[in-house]
Amino acid sequence: MLDESLSAREQWDVLAQQFSHLNVTSQFELHLQLFTERLKDAEDAPRYLRVLENGRWRFAEMGVVFTDEEAIFMLINGLPEMPQWIVFCGLTIGMYTNSSTAFTTVSSTSPPAHQKSPSKPL
Image 1 (cartoon, rainbow, N blue to C red):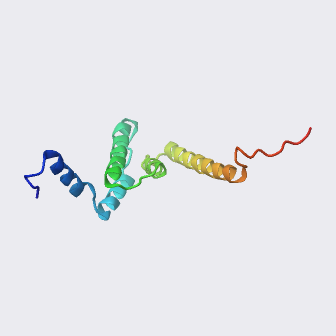
Image 2 (cartoon, rainbow, N blue to C red):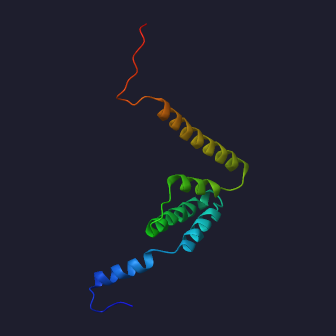
Image 3 (cartoon, rainbow, N blue to C red):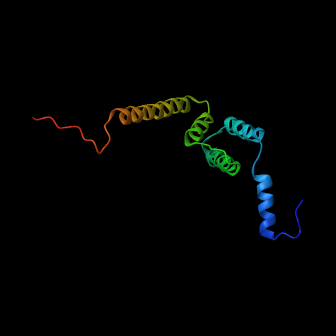
């Protein structure tokens, strides 16, 4: 597998290139694993966040773009199905959706900063 005439660094690069890029099936399996991960209770939060963070690192190693929006969605999706968490999820998703929509609306209707609209006389 490895050529003994290569330096340790060159051998490492060969191994990294061979094993760092996983196939599409592995990407879908990781998505599914993160999507089905659940927070059990408040004491489980460090483990839950560590699993999600490790998933992000694995996507980065594969060269797969994993956006903040995807991470937030998966984090919220894994919260317990208790009334207070359901309300929190609804509010958080609603606030995120509204802020994204408001930003898009403002940025598309507001003139650029260097083009100030003429002020009206009082």
